[in-house]
Image 1 (cartoon, chains in turn cyan, brown):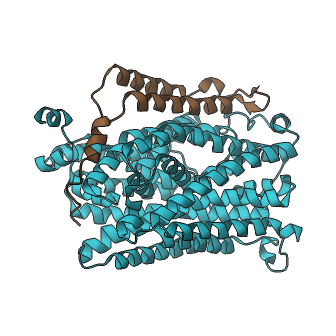
Image 2 (cartoon, rainbow over the protein chains, first blue to last red; image 1 turned 90 degrees about the vertical axis):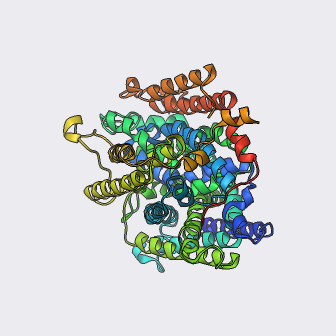
Image 3 (cartoon, rainbow over the protein chains, first blue to last red; image 1 turned 120 degrees about the vertical axis):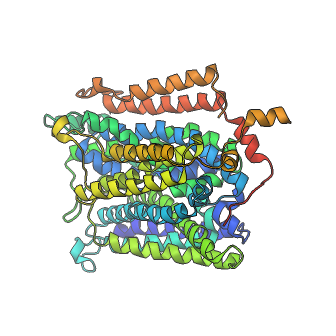
Length: 519
Length: 82
């Protein structure tokens, strides 16, 4: 019985999530507006938890631990501390404006906003496939992370049933269960259910992360002893420093990656759920602290696992390190189950928002645009959204069965795509002169450059540009080049094309001084 | 956002300083441990996260976009042309 206790705990957790989805359904008002943006009724704490939970996916827990296992403590500076500064900047400088415009004019998706702001119906059709295509690797990260963690936890548990994975539950089965659970609670209650589940799961994974940290530290003789072992077992490139692992230009140009939050379609949707602008205050201030609470323990666990000599199981990569550490170093099977449930919580709290927004975009940006707003009933809109989500999930699931990429590197490529499009949203709310043709050209250039560099990287590997100038382990992150290409295209083409109409400028750039004097 | 005032300029200045402080080359090869268990390069960036939170708390306090907030809270006017 004892070996199966972790699985029972995880199963109980998943059932609890389903119940939460059913309870949230009791508050569902049955309208598409409630399904897609929860009638803009979400308060500060839930917004903080849902936005944070959504941005912290398998990348933050499984990916950061695995990357720190190989690369050391510099992983935190690469992503976490940059994100603390830049994510909140995006929420404050872009998110609040988008929320205000979205509320004022009733927008539900990014494409609706961009289409009106840049006076281009074609732009919506063009952006939709790009945003969906970029969200697939993001979903993939979640499925790979869940599969890797459960595999690490269940090694030798079912030797006769799953002989090919050394008795561990294979990733295909974990992915199937996770997708089923998340799809169910998203379908039952829409974005309200997603926000409830996100809040709950974010609390769970933050709490269990701290517990995991102390349990693993205790098993290694305490935090001091655990860190000392890393130092003793290190060669000249110790995991306790960045030298030899991360280049200085690489470290600097990672700053472009967190700009992705400005273009994440699922975050856009979460922003729109806010009850008021004040709701954002808690998120803007506490987001960097929440990142720190999650990332510091994960990075430490990663280097401790390396110091202890833990290794991924045969056939698995560094993604499995967190699961292996929990299994090997946490004595109590109950706690091991709880900690794994916490890791899955982090993964699912992103998957649900992504599922939700993919459905919203398809319904609002494609189906309603083609059929007309009056032809479809609210029920039909919801069913269309659900159908498209299932399609995307099936495609992602099938890809997850054949890919073996490292979560961290794959995530960075996904984020790079969104980050490169950031100049567009920035221009949309700050530069009146930005034009529709310029945005279309910028999207084209971004897609072309991203695709070329993604191919050069071996379809999702770690890749640095201009290494021949900066040294073997240094170089420029591809995201910097793609973002600058997008930015330059946007600026140059805007200047050589006709400016937006005065009506559009008035609509999206209210003149507050003038309004005050005329009142 | 509101027109830049002294507080806004000061917060922008702090943001630029924080931006520069991210490049802590001086700890690049340093393996020192602080608080008994934290490598110094990690401790520095953990504190950096706290400073980022402080920066945004100041921004919220002194440069809150009240005009946008009021504008959004006026009654809904136009709907997207779906």
